[in-house]
Structure formats: C-alpha cells, structure tokens
Image (cartoon, rainbow, N blue to C red; front, side):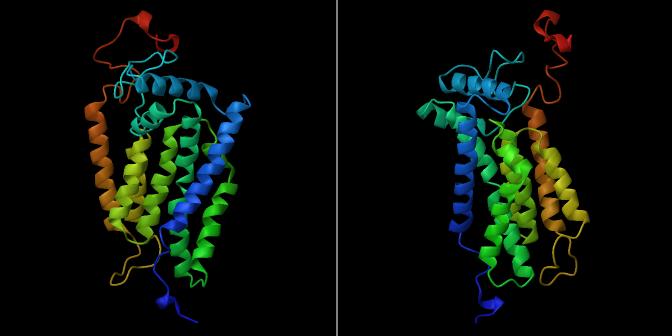
Length: 267
C-alpha cells in the first residue's frame, strides 16, 4: 500500500468543483421552489434587489423605488461588487430565478474551501482516504441550519462572506498566501463591510496557532498570510471609503437632503 508521502498533495480541482455544483443546484433549487410557492425567506430584499438588477440590466439606474436612498452603484447605501455579474446573466435571461440561483451558487461555493480545509486536516491526521473524508466533511456543512438558511434566503450577495472567510483560513492552513488573497477578494465582492471581517481573520492568523508548523518553521502561526490579508483588508477599506459617499451613513452628512426626502426613521 502506498504511503502518505506517495499520495498526491491535493485532490484534482474537479472534486471541489463537483461539490460546489451539487450544493448550488440543491440550495438554488430549494430557493427557487420556495419563491414559486410564495414562501420566500426574506421577500423584501428579493423584491428590491430584483428591481435594482432589472433596472440596471435595461439601462436604468442602480436603484429601486422600494428604497429611499441615493441612486447609483456606489451611491447606494450598500454596494455589492458582484452585482454586475448578476446583471449580465439577468440581461440574457431576465427572470427572478437568476437571483435565486446565484444565491445557491454563492453559498455552495463555501464547499470548496471546506473541502480543502478538511483535506488538509485529514492529511495531517494520517487519514488513508483523504479525498473521501474531505468530501464527506464538506457535504456535512449542508446539514447545518445556518448553511441552509443562507443558501435559501432569497438573494443576499453578502453570503459571499462565507466562502471568502472560510477560504482565507483554508488557504492559510496550507500556507498559501496567494490563494488566501483570492478568497479575500471573493469576500470583498459580497458587500462593502467585508474588510472588517477580513481584518479580524487576519489578526487571528497573526496571533493564534493554526495547524501544525510548516517545514522549516518553528511557529504554528500563519503570520505571513495574516499580514498579507490584513494589508488587503486595509487597502480595500481605504478604496471603499474613497469611492462611496454613503460608506457609513444612509446619506452623505456633508450634503444633507431635504427633510421631506428622508424616510421617517431618519427625520
């Protein structure tokens, strides 16, 4: 029987890809079925996101009449960098199901880093069937109530925080800084608050042990990856502040609108 040293370091990319596809089909299918049964989880958000996407896909403003806030991609209270992708697909197939399917895909994407993290832990423990163990561990996340909730909560792009942050930790476990930065970018696509979570994750990697010590190193901390992610988080935060007048407020406090234009809770 071949030893652990003769086994490939990682399973081929097709394995986590199939896991993500299956999870996306399951969660997206449930999301679509709930909406068609007039039983959405959070109908208000689905309604205004659908209006924003529909308007942008047809050359209109990034806005919804359901939201009393400034119009524009960066002027809206919350900016989601992944929305142009959704708009592009919606332009080709203008149906509400596009948003619901994307929600399942965004949540299902978390199975990729979950698989890689489980794969690393299984290998550290000397497991024989590493790919099988890691696949079962990744699939088991679908049994978690919170995972099912975010995967079927209509449409909330901030769900990309889940695969993004998990991906940072999975990559750091294997000391892959470049990969961690890619997952940090995924998280940043979800919503403008991502740098806060990324900074917290980075500080944890700098300060706390995470997995066994890498060859040639005495520390179990992944401080190099942590510092890189922290630099990315700070840069992303600075960029958000630079392009968003409504980064911290529902309106720009230096250019107050007329009181009559504000929602009652803002007056």
